[in-house]
Length: 358
Image (cartoon, rainbow, N blue to C red):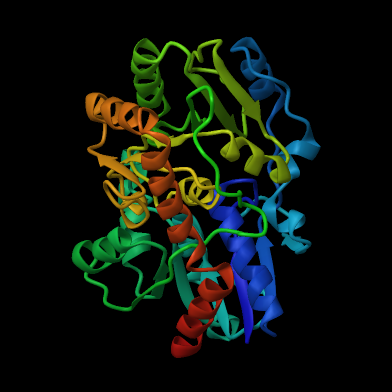
C-alpha cells in the first residue's frame, strides 16, 4: 500500500514518536510511506525573549527542528508555505492518515485519489480547547475510519460521536531501548515523573504529591525529565530535572526509580508509564484514560482519581514502603505487562486495520 501521514508540526512529542514508529514499521512491512507537513514554524524573536524573561532558555532552530521522524531515518516532506496541506501537495496513495484534529480539516478536502481517509486518534482533542471546541467537534464527526490507542477513546468515539468504524491498536514500547535486569529497590527511595508545563500533564499535582512524600520520606530522591525547562512552574531544588536527555539515556533514568508517578488530567495512552514498566518500575497513576489499560491496581501499581492528591500520595508511599519481596512482585508484573506485546505486534494490527478499509 501507499500510505501518507499528514502531520501538523513534526516534533519530539510522544504522539509524533508513535506516528514515526508506525511509519518505520509499515515501511519495513513493504509499504511505501510518505510523511508530509506544512513549512516548519520557528519561535519568533519576541517569543524567545519572553521565554528568557521567564527564566527559560533560547531554543536554537536546530533543536526546534528536531523530530522523531528524523531520528528514525524517515524523510519528512515540508510544503513551501505555512498554509494547511492541500490535496495538490500530496502524492496519490491508497491511504491518507490525519494525525491531529486540524489535519482532519485538511484531509477531508483531499481528492479521492489521495487515498481512503483515516483519523489516527491518540488523545481527546477537546480537552482544554474551549475556544475552538466547535471546530474540533466538527472535525471528529467527519465520517472517516478511526484507529485509536486505548479503550477509553474507543468509548468516546462510539458513544459521544456515534461512530462505529473504529479499530483499537494499543501502543507498545521499544524493548530494545527500554529494559532492565531484575533488581531490588534502590538504597535511597526514588520516584520519577515526566515534567511538562502542559496543564493536562498534571505536574502541579505531581509536585504536591512529591512534597507530601518528602515529608514522609525525607531521604526521598526525585528524578524527572522533559523536553523544555521550567518557565511558569517552580520546581524544588531537590528535583533532578533532566531537560531533553538523549533518547538512549532515558532508560537509565527509569532504572534509577522505585516508582513512576503520573498525575495527568487526561492521557491518551501514557507511554512513559509503559516505558518505565519495561524498565521494571511499578507505577502510580491517575485514572485519566490510557493508563487505565496499563496499570492493574494492586498488581503492577495503583490507580487514583484525577486530582486526588491524598490517594496518590498514600499509594506512592505504599509502594516506596514495600519490602524488597513485595516491590519485586510489583516490578515483575510491570515488566511482564510491558514485554508481552511488541511494536511489531502493534504494526501488524495497524496494517490489518488499514487493509480492511482500503
